[in-house]
Image (tube, rainbow over all chains, first blue to last red; front, top):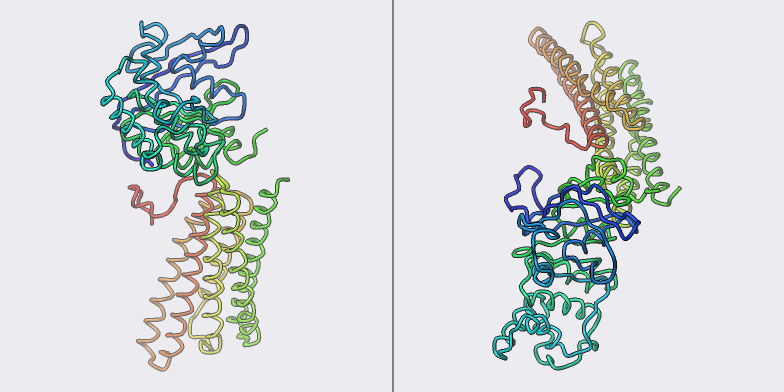
Length: 260
Length: 221
């Protein structure tokens, strides 16, 4: 956890200015401005339907895959606009990986799940692929559990292992940012603890943005917390401050369970 | 009302009840000292057991609230501060007992004027107002309690110097004066405890520590 008295030393990785988002006529996010620092964990909290998952998806434009959307304002990665800066979508999704609520491994072997991304980006050499798969599985703290059964189907793994496999799959293409949309909501406390430990290790080299409904999880894993309500940012600050002395009444009510 | 809010209210009510016993003990101590009344001094001792019982009960309530509800923000501050206020109240009870056991040893009176009574009543007022600030979420009152401590400290200092003079002038008074020094020291400590409670009230209400202002470059401490 960061000290509230020390200045932030990490650069801004993602920057959002006056950003709005709508599905057709329906406005989901409005007037959002915030900065996300590199090598920090930023948690997005807020009641269901407040737009936190939508916000997450805007960072790798994954919502564009399925629906007609309109994004206005600025969303920058390393100072370059994600929407208008001429960034290739596929390359953006390599740089900004995502892990979802329920583990969603491909119905393939453990090895093929992790090798999928590198193959997509043209890696063909078997030895190189082997190295990338091992590296990603190690980073996801899964290697020791699966190294002797890489050819087994991923669907036969436990839920917690499947989720770590999905993280390994995302890590295999060397992303700079990892978006996590309630990554532990389908996991038991032991599997959850492993993912949280992993988040702690991964932030050494990655920018992590996590959406969670679990207040304690947000408090445990994140450096910064942003509270969303009805598509707007109510308050953002160091997690330690948000959970002890929030400035906004609405934040206080939400984190103490008195909302609504 | 949610279960958590009910339990939080139970904790608050418990602290109020414990503070009520502390105030009763202070009142009895003042009377026992003035009369002097060994019977009232004995009552003070009996009430101390109640304080100890409250301390154990309320400590457990705080731990349960922390463990079962994982509170945040002002709820967390209130429970964390309660864990500090409870032992302050318990110590107030102990100081009253320390005074009460000396009521007969300081008679007949050797101090002129009513400084001793005033020290007791000013201290009582600080405790009462600190508890009122806690119950009524009153930051201004808590701040006033903290400022009152200087007045109690000054009165303590004055009585202490008077007692030194009395002892120098008349060695036959040394025993009573020595007991009186312990009596006034205990009152002064009770006033400190009231100050600590008031500081916790400010922490609950404002989310910043009011302790040790000199560390923040402020002069008073």
